[in-house]
Image (cartoon, rainbow, N blue to C red; front, side, top):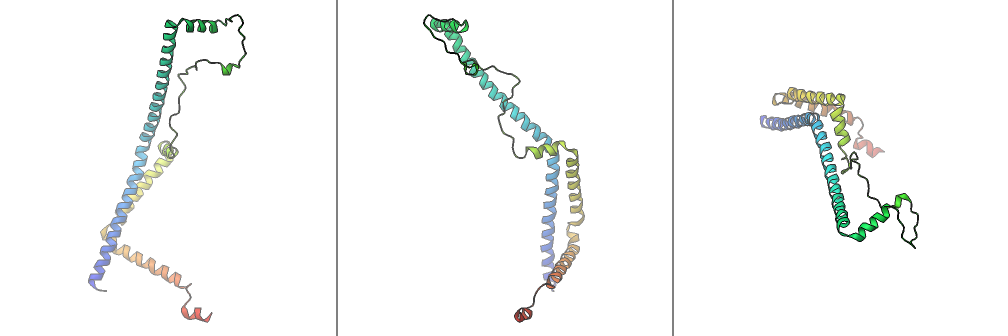
Length: 195
């Protein structure tokens, strides 16, 4: 093997080592970011859902106020409407009028507003259970941080250019061992022709 071929192999292995190093550092940074940002993002999602629920409730109340304004206007300016409301409220019956009993569920009443009732606006996203687990479970958080630390430590220890010769040796040894192991099970052409 010439010096130039050996140098080309080293630069190829050096490139793979560098790429692996940066990918592992990105993975460690992602794990750390998941631990640090998940509680904040979960709080943001809860606040956003509450905000949207309040917006829906506000629009509902505005519609109810507008309806009540129309009723108040009609009560002030429409004597026929006023008399009809009084007749219904006092259960008065006109001569010759026939009443039919109706189930209370079918009565035309205004729905009562419950201020404690929260209107669910959005459905929960698929990642919210994982996010809450990472946010609230201290064992999971510690495991993720420990994994990120080990990845960083191993990356800086074993994946740098000065280790390329040792990694090349380990790679060749592993490749030779696997090919030797697999060659035991290969059938040579002469044996295949005999069968």
